[in-house]
Image (tube, rainbow, N blue to C red; front, side, top):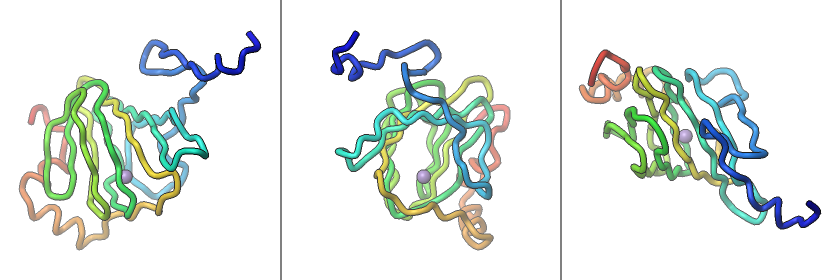
Length: 157
Ligand code: MN
């Protein structure tokens, strides 16, 4: 097949994979605390100012608790779990949309029985995430709902 337009089509594969898309470890740099996450970059074209990625958090896993100037636009695709954005904690299920504003603490946690998969759109050029220092964690834990979220996963929430 020598029609270059054919390469524009990348079929979905079983298991939330896509043809020609590598499945990568979540982060290269070491210090951030996270657990059981994979990352696939679906779209990253120089003509676009953004990237679209697919993250999957294994049961009981969680993303890094972080904040940064760039924003995220998230759509849940599979499973269920919980999200923290700022001081709000909510259960999340497929097709929910979550916006993460600039400089806002955020984290996703998968339920114990199912992976949590989501699309995340992000600026192609972006600042490095900041991790919470002790006073930040103290302020977050002062809110009971946030404190309970940070201690997930219990048997049920
Ligand atoms: Mn982030």
